[in-house]
Amino acid sequence: PEGWTVVHGPAPYEECTAAVA
Image (cartoon, rainbow, N blue to C red; front, side):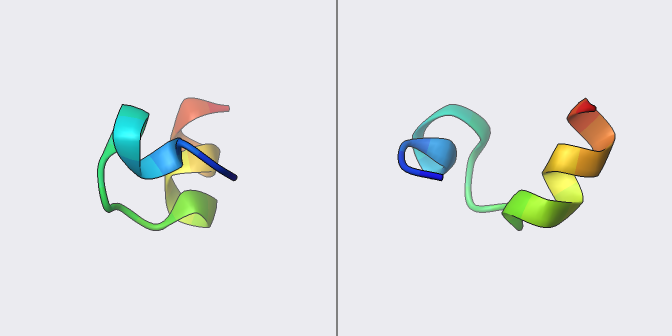
């Protein structure tokens, strides 16, 4: 989603989502 790289960095969204969720 927009702003993801700004908040979480360049890591893949799907991979990070799993870790965050």
